[in-house]
Image (cartoon, rainbow, N blue to C red; front, side, top):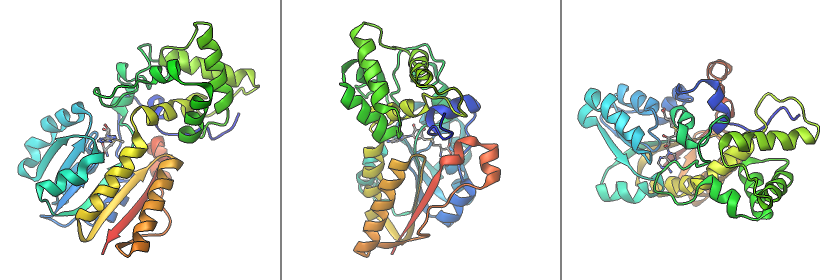
Length: 310
Ligand SMILES: C[S@@+](CC[C@H](N)C(=O)[O-])C[C@H]1O[C@@H](n2cnc3c(N)ncnc32)[C@H](O)[C@@H]1O
């Protein structure tokens, strides 16, 4: 079995349910170079790790999350501590540029830490845990229409293979997609995370794969999650939207966990540099150190890219 079976998302569920360690906080803080009294945007509030670090350094934060539960938690935990210096906004960060410019806020830095937080991934209804027995949902925002099960029920083998390959780097994308379509025609489509995880494991097992450091279904789960939530589109729209509202010297720090996301950010940042709008803090992405990976295995696939507006 391939040693590297994909990353983030589901994999991390088995590595400590409900515990979310903010990733590369030291590196993010260094990148943002927080100035007391200035405003920063945390485009992915989650459990509030990065927001809290900025607030502790004296910055003020507009914290955004599309998950109402993340906002509610911060309302209870962080708002009483930081008051006026923290503003909470429940929205898709895809639209944050427009929202922030309408609010007339001068922004000195933005951090975006893509993906899911640990408590979201282990929620019963989320459909991300390999042993979940609810319906395969995977929607981060309850208003989204398409669930992961909808994809399995309605897409052709070619469409599913493209999803698994493009958004999960799944090497057996076509084999798995064809097997799913075959099962569907017999009325035996996997309908829960547990069934899908077992199904993908079965495909790998039949191809002679026996052992893996990671669950064989990791890549398929990640691909479905990214597509269900339109994650790449939101990332690109969100990051593109905040560039024009950064002050001169303002910093944009983006953490990604998947090659496709990192590629998008790399190309975006490079195109801005070519246009003469800013520069990169470093040409290569910053990676987590060994100690962090040991403490928080979810961080191992993280890549941090930082753009500085001129
Ligand atoms: C990896 S967690 C962030 C963890 C956070 N940095 C911390 O320190 O706890 C990602 C968070 O971003 C949110 N999120 C993901 N995509 C989003 C989007 N398009 N718009 C707004 N929030 C989003 C998720 O709901 C989740 O809470």
